[in-house]
Length: 105
Image (cartoon, rainbow, N blue to C red; front, side, top):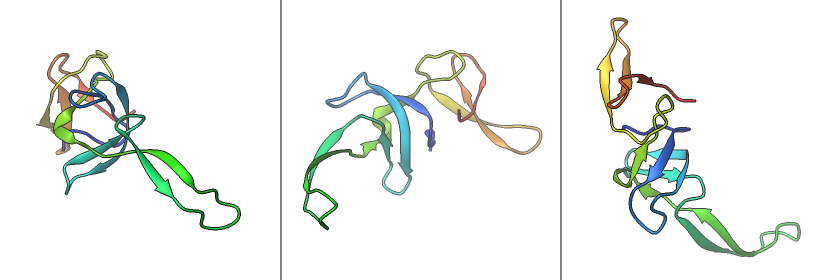
């Protein structure tokens, strides 16, 4: 996948279009990502013990990976990436706009 955990992304489609956030989790089998404070859904929970309160909790719901785009940490713009193999044998992501290697922050 072109998105990894801890990347900064911008949401391209849906009710939260234009919001930016950090990726909390990546689900490759489902092709979805969990973005911080985006695509919030209300979950109704019941009281489990006398210490834990029940009620309505807002949680992030997964977004399809095609609806988010990476924000390059170098040029600070939303950009597509491609994979490049270095001389050492490692594969890295490279920003198409500034041609710099994209690393996790």
